[in-house]
Length: 205
Length: 221
Image: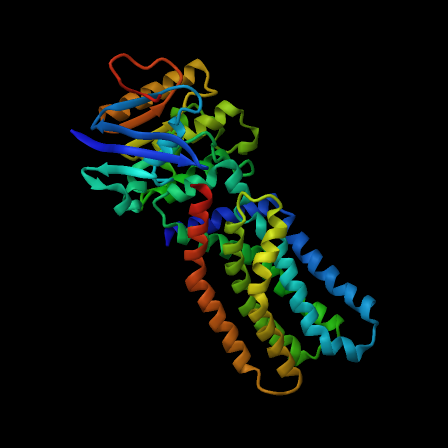
């Protein structure tokens, strides 16, 4: 069943036409991989999907309702991982993640538990109390990805999530996406790497 | 409401650990005020006449000093995008940021002002009213400044630009803030001025989160 879809989307950034007349659809429990050359509009499309930016034309639908009619609900059900990791160097790793988990949760939940589990999953469990300024670029990316686990949402929008990750962490990311899909979640992933066999793929011109 | 406390706690933690900023603002405030007696001469009559104005103008300038940093680091490291995308309403987050700005700059300014009042030979009655007027006025400065800081996001030399944008909006607050102290010194009633300041604060609290949130959304789009 198609849950999230876009039709005839046009995106203009700084008076430059990035893409036009673009359509996509994501089904429950499925991933959509965006591929294409640098500057082909993968990031712009993800920003449009996240409702960070309004498309110049076209429609973005969730269960056949216009996304822009209810933005808070859309933000509640999507998690976006962009190029910038949003990590504060003076806060500890645990504090960084706990803040994002806290303001992403619309229902009060016992805090702390989910954060620690998420950190362990991405291999930062031991470093929870360390200030984030000591993290490498790859570790910062892992901390950013841990948000996906600490505050679950149905749709993941990932912009080159494997950039800067070592092989082991890239494998963890793959299994994170796989188990997210297995639970009926959805993911849109912009990537330059090989697309998993059988996955839907959208090539941007 | 939970989003507000979480954001406030984060901002305060960031301000405390990065340190320096509040101290810098208070030092600037004290230095500017101390420069005035050197400039206009140490005649107690003149100083106590213009003291309230000096303290208020210096407080405005000091509050401006850290204003352009309100969203800048969040903007640069991508946190601002994530804040916009969080289900917590952006208006609440902006309000929390303004509150944190007031707690880290406005409150220290208020704390330092009685001493400066004494240095400028203000009478006790005048100092008390000045504290009240600063307590009502400085939160409004932080709230209005939050709009300006959002508008200059992404601009080069945002620090200068924000002064040009925001200082004119501070004029009513300045007029009624100084007016209250002057009235008290002349032993007139100062209650109306304080009430107008309170009204300005309520107006800023009601309107600025919407305006600042809209400007932030514009900046990250």
